Image 1 (tube, rainbow, N blue to C red):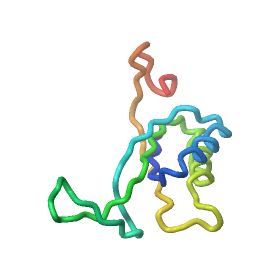
Image 2 (tube, rainbow, N blue to C red):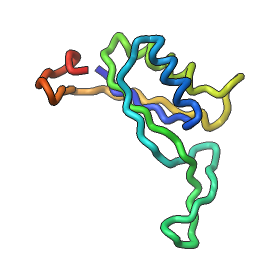
Image 3 (tube, one colour):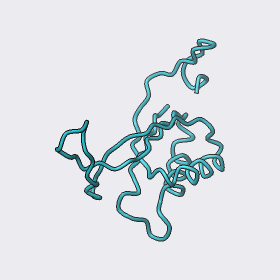
Length: 115
């Protein structure tokens, strides 16, 4: 089991969801987040203070998958998140982490059956 975390542009979410559906990945958690990398960000006021932080709005996708779905999920995210053409700086990142356990609260199922 793996936990795939992807940081993507907000305007690419529907494309990513469509690509995930094509590879039969239907479970997804989406979180709003702020950050920057090579884009260098843009200036925002922080809690009304004059200081500013260079942050851009992004979405964090969290997807728990069984091992056989890892590569199809990665390829779907790449397909959906990449900007038109050759892609652009700021298209995002994908992180793949080992997942020790998963428990479905409703039934108590554990491991790959809970995903």
